[in-house]
Amino acid sequence: MTETPKRTYEETLTYLFYHLPMFQRIGPAAMKKDLGNILALSKALGNPHQQFRSIHLAGTNGKGSTAHMLAAVLQAAGYKVGLYTSPHYRDFRERIKINGEFIPQDRVVGFVESHEDLFQNIQPSFFEITVALAFTYFAEEEVDFAVVETGLGGRLDSTNIVQPELSIITNISFDHQQFLGNTLEKIAGEKAGIIKPRTPVVIGETQAETESVFTTKAAQSSASISFADQQILAKPLRYTLSSTCFEIWRNGEQWLAELEVDVRANYQSLNLQTVLQSLWVLREAGILDWNEESLRRGLREMRSLSRFIGRWQILDREPLIIADSAHNEGGLKPTLKQLTDIPFEQLHIVFGTVSDKDLEKVLPLLPKAATYYFAKADVPRGMPAEQLKAAAQQKGLLGKAYDTVAIALVAAQEAASAKDVIFVGGSIFVVAEVV
Image (cartoon, rainbow, N blue to C red):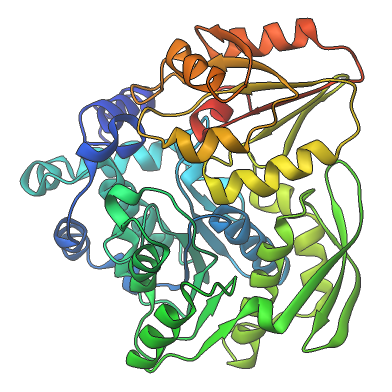
């Protein structure tokens, strides 16, 4: 006879979100300084991370896009694919998917209820429990591959217990300096912690400050290393609002013509290059079997196959409303450049951020020729709208403060004409309230 669950799904989420340390909600206080908890959890659960093949991703920007593209191509090639990403936007289950389908609610409830004594003993964080849940689910469902995105950093990230077939580091920019270091070299050193012995690694972007960090770590680990942007050139040919057609060159020779990708962003060229180099390395090593047909289908149908949201997402057309979760210097620069390339009569920006964000690096990137609607994201870490407005005003960014993101967006919609553009961004938590 099946026992009646002690909690509903909603009650289980309340337990996870509010009774456990959670970086998404409270910030630095949730951070753990080693892998002891996740290793203890995994051992008690039978080491599920050792029961499936994986691809492990780190990097400051582009992890989510790269992970979803990879997962979609693997799905199109016929593999059963687990995908672990973080944070989520609206539904906790966005973090854990198999072939684009969210983990069922009863699996979340059952996992938490079955292991509460274990949690009491180990005292894991929200993130550690979520990683353990994901790996257990992938093992039980016997996925062919799991595409696993780090949460923050790499070396000490809870996902770093996997022994992957391939490690990927997309790029390095300034973010979370209080944990990862205040130079690109130090940040790269933390991300390089996912490089495993005799496991190939693909670096998405060659950067003078970080290249030697990665090559040195790869040499120490006897890991083959390649830099995607030195091998692959993804040249945008034309755009629609939601997709891009690329011409792909490899080592100076044309490889793929008219490759349609379900993303509309100049900055996605780097992510696409990383994906293509990773797929190439995996196929050359005999780990993956894919062909041009599955590659094209996976990239053309990426959003639907892997349920990708929150990046350059079109919410409405008249006026055009775009939401994008870029939130640091490296992510905002190309996103805002692309935004200002769109023809419009007036630009409206609904903007919010978190209290620990370095505004001196972020605010100067924002266009002054826009009307701003400053809002506090609905998380404890959200920066008060009046505080953000005052800091922005000092940089020549003018607008009003609003109590919530929803109210700010309504104000922007009421002020905008059909030929205007409204952009919603500055934080994942801001975007989560509108997608």
